[in-house]
Image (cartoon, rainbow, N blue to C red; front, side, top):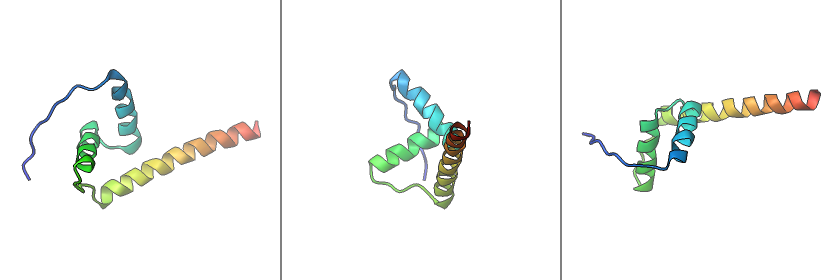
Length: 75
């Protein structure tokens, strides 16, 4: 499928949130925007590797939070 470039302006506050999401999921900002649009229009573009990457990122976030919680409880 050929892809076309689409551009839009977004609030500055979204940029930071998009960057954080990109870092936590390991996906580029373009991939995140692509998937968000696909979801909105009812297209399923995710594949197993995307889902696994998302789950791995969530597990990493949970581990970090658990580590902080454990540290605060033991100090």
